[in-house]
Each structure stands twice: as C-alpha cells, then as structure tokens.
Length: 243
Image (cartoon, rainbow, N blue to C red; front, side, top):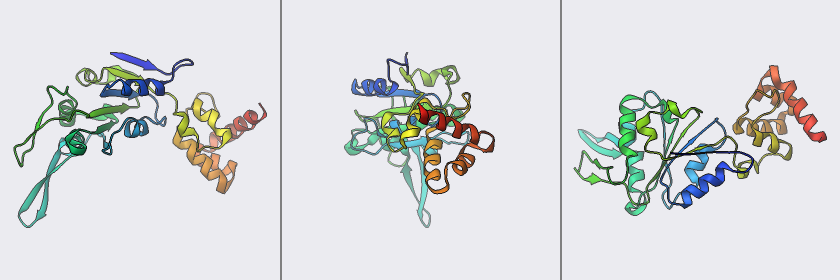
C-alpha cells in the first residue's frame, strides 16, 4: 500500500493529480477536516457524469447505497437505484465517480455493501432485484473514500485493502484559498490561527472572512472561534500584518 503525505517538497494535491492521471481508480484521502478532501473527490478527474456521494453514519443502510423499493402509486412499487449503482453505470454505461465520506463511521450491513461496491472490477457485480439484470461497474468507474482520522489502522483491513493508495491531506488546495482575503491565506494554508495548538478548518476561515466584512473582525472572531480565543486570533492577524 502506498501512503503519501504533504511536506515541504511534496504536495499531497500533486500526489492526487498524479495518481488520478495514472489511472488509479481507488483512492483513500485521510487527515484533518476542513482541508478540501471531499471537494477534491467530487471534482478532481471526474468525467462526464456528476459524482455520486455517500456520507456514512452508524445508521446508513445497504438500501441507501445500492437502492430501495419506492411507492409510485396505489399498490405499485418501483426499484430506485442508489448512488453506488448510479456511479457504476455513469454516463452511457461507462461508469462515474463514487465518493464515500466518513467511511470510518460505516458499520455492519453498510460496510458489507461498501466492500461489494468497491471490489475489483473483475469481481464486482450486483443484481437488480426488479429486472434480475446483472450490473457491473463501467470501465471508467472510480471511487474515492475520505476520513478525518489519522490512524489508518482504524479502517477495517478488508476495506483498506481495496484502496492501494492512501494520501494524507493536511492542507487546503491553493485554489481553495483564492477567495480568501490576502491576510488569511497563509494561516489557512497552515491550518491554524491564534493558539498554536488550535487547528482551524477552511470552513471557519471562510465564515470569519465573510462575517468580518459585515460585523467587524472582533465580532466575527467571537462568533467563529469563541470568546476565549478571539483576542488571540486578532493578535495573530495583527502580528502577521507587520511581517
């Protein structure tokens, strides 16, 4: 299993681009929240079909993955395929992208179904309960799973084995910083602002930047980061503006 991490010389985003360009169709992205893992999974290297997304919870069922029977009239039911099968088919049967978020939270029935949906192309198949059609993933099908955990040992070995490339994402993509004000781009890239031990997600930087345009920096810092550290956040920005 290949595991890549961001450092001074290697960009995790370049790693992801290289892996996708090389035709790897199973990738696991892991690391702290708010760094754009899901956004990259939904948009990077996606073909003609929009990516399908699943968010795992302890209550996720196999029906929410592959599909379920739905009422369409009095005493009439139709089978509605779920996101995994739609991604298998993709545009024109060529296959699309399936994104599975928070995969470490999946359990029981859902995990078993995810194992089937992310199996190798030679082994993966599913039978439509309405038409009895056997469905296989299209040749362009790809799946990216994400998790906020840092220890890959917390991923079930059977699932992890299906993803030969694991990339640790610990910084936002440079394009994700473009909409931030200049003074927030460096701390957003570092993922911290205020107390050194406090990690700040990209979503918080976006919210703070927008709120301070309307309410001022002090009020915005209190609302986003909390009263206890708001002063430290403002001090950090003031010091950074002098360098």
